[in-house]
Length: 240
Figure 1 (cartoon, rainbow, N blue to C red):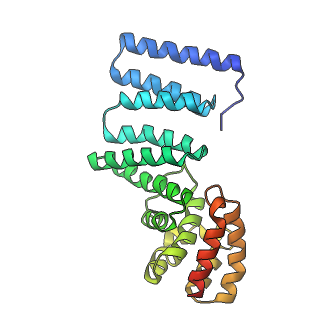
Figure 2: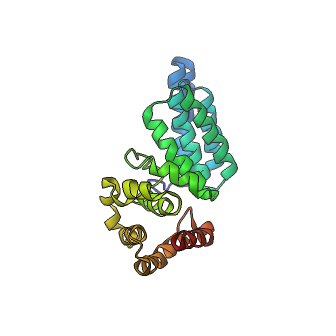
């Protein structure tokens, strides 16, 4: 969301200032300063003017000027965030593949950990629940991607997809008894009871809370389109 309501005149005035900054950097400074000035313009277009198409074009210009795997991933994350809002899964997949290549080139641990969350969200969007679950469960202790989702929402996804896809040993260690999960799952209605009743084979209690969890899934930003599939698959796992 923009930090304030900008008029068209204010947007144009600010863009002119940013253009002047880019021009000055090109004429009087180095490549890093030019890139940073271009990034300032891209971020303004994305987060204040909300002109995503133009912003993406300028982010990619800055990406081409950038050296270093970690910095390139940072820029790709900004582009992926915009394409998540647009639900452009094809564009998201291409940029996640680029990020994965940069990880192999030596990106830092923070970028590697964040990329797991970005890729996990993409997997939810295309209904690859198993891969999303694997990525989320492996990231419970290292989550930092607050620009994408809150930690509470991340815990919700990690738990409901973990119960669906992980084996009993993993569910016990990484979900039911995880200190990081336990620190917040009481704040998410029905989640603690949902996971514990499932693990303890209390199916009467499980289905009481399952109904409420399904309602949240139906209204979730990433899972709403797949609510029927999640409900069906989770019910089958419970019966088994």
